[in-house]
Length: 266
Image (cartoon, rainbow, N blue to C red; front, side):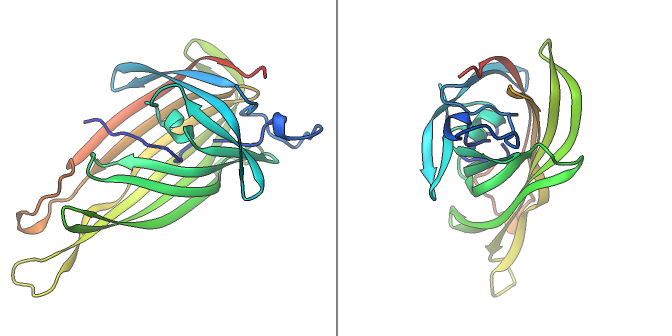
């Protein structure tokens, strides 16, 4: 079963901001792990459960949010990969050695239950972060009705700097000065049901609290994101009294994104 990330967000997961086009002068404190000049682009080979597709991500334009200049990202076609989904139609800016993302992250438990998680200046990268240092975290609750079932989705999106690597090999290429980032989306879903013998609705857990998305992104200095490995997995509980929801009872997907070519010369 295909699980689709709408990281219109987006997103975990994943992300960046003011580029050298919008910064006057030279500031050595500015991170350059994801060059964000206009028209920069990255093309990825996306491998999802043994199916190969392609994503093309580029910096499309400047946008101003709360008097701050961000870079807006777009994809040539509807994105397939976790990373491109996370960046598509979202805005990012560089704040010192951090990369901040504003927009929304999407995840679907089937077409009947699309989730959109809003984020604002969410830290997805920090060049000076130590190993296993938390970068950003956002929690919230979404109320949604599916076939007269009132659902409450509690979630936490979290990013962590895992480690720094002198070199990293991917897709036949060797990259230097690489940072490994982990993004996790954790969720729990409950609903209220009328159960035989009980005169009032009871709260039932549909999805036990679990990590539904775990993604690792690798960033190479002066290039950007060069490789992503993402696992999407969840399992819903059976409902009492034979009640059913129009949602797949479980899902599992493994995805890799390999940088094929790029242009960050602008």
